[in-house]
Structures are given as C-alpha cells and as structure tokens.
Length: 207
Image (cartoon, rainbow, N blue to C red; front, side):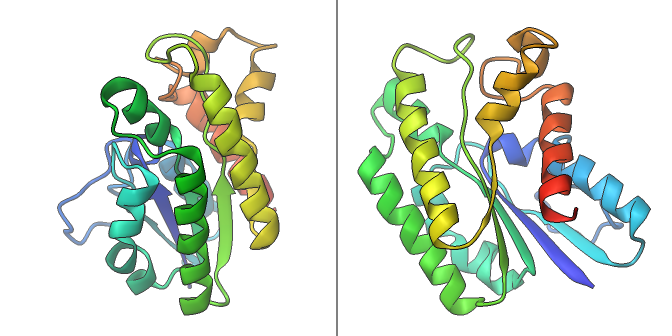
C-alpha cells in the first residue's frame, strides 16, 4: 500500500481533522482537494492507497520546515504533495511577518534537499502558489506570488518533482466562469476550485 501525504497551508488544510484519532480510510481529510483526490483513488483503487493530510492553516514555508520531521519525514510517504507560499506573501502585507522571496527559495530548497536525503525514493509533487486579484488579495501580491511560482517551477525541475500549475489552472478556468466561482477571496478555493486541483493532481500523479 502506498502512502500519499498532503502538506501546506489552509488551501490544503481545508478544515482537516487534527485530533490524531484513528479514522476510517479517507476520513478527516477536510473539504478540499486532498479529500477529492482520496475519494477518487479509494473508489478506483481499493486497498492501494493511504491518504494523509497534515497541512496547517496559516503556515508559511518556515512553519512547514519547523514541523517537517514529525509531520513529513517520520510518516515516510511514497508520494509527498506540497503547496506553500501564499502566506509568505499574505503575512508580510498584513502584519509584516512574511518570508521574503529569496529566503522562501532558500528554505524551500533546503526542505526538499532534506526530504530527498531522508526519503530518496519519494515522489514529490509541487503545487505552485497562486492568487486572483480580489477579496483578500491586495496590491502587489500578484507580482510577488509570480516570483514564488517561478521558484517552485525551478525547484520542481531541480528535484525532478511533478509540477502542478495552480495559477494557470485557475486562470484558464476564467473562460468558463468568473474568479468568484473558483475562490471565495482570491486565495481559498471554493468547491469548483478544489475540483480543478484534484483533477489536475490525479492526472499528473496517477495518470
């Protein structure tokens, strides 16, 4: 049985269970794309996957790094999916407690280097951060998020990870419905947005 671990911030957290109780397969994953991925895989491949969500709302890359040993390495996943970066920008604009772009790159790189050293056979999935310019998203966010997106794509190339273009998925979806259909505030996906990510994730990772 393969273990899939989802990591990140509130976009991935999506209200997941944090009690550490033993739950039925697929339970406690929150109401976001990890749950939708799990529903498809548990239906199509019974008994083949264990799916775990350890994302925490509000996390920046430094928060992820601080808990990486217990919440990622000790789990020893076969597939590790990460989306991190929007709070590194958001927290700076909101309360001057973000993570500067060069530091974000340095810490993210070290986190992935550490992961591959400890888990050389893990399959990495890197989902780029994204924003749409409304709701919680202020002036200057998009330009900074674009820099973080470029970093994630570069890291995916370096570490031979599967890359999920979250921003492009949402931007392309605007041809079908306005941005308010996909996210509630420019950051947090609504159900349709989560389905976009889940579909893309399954296609890229599982095939």
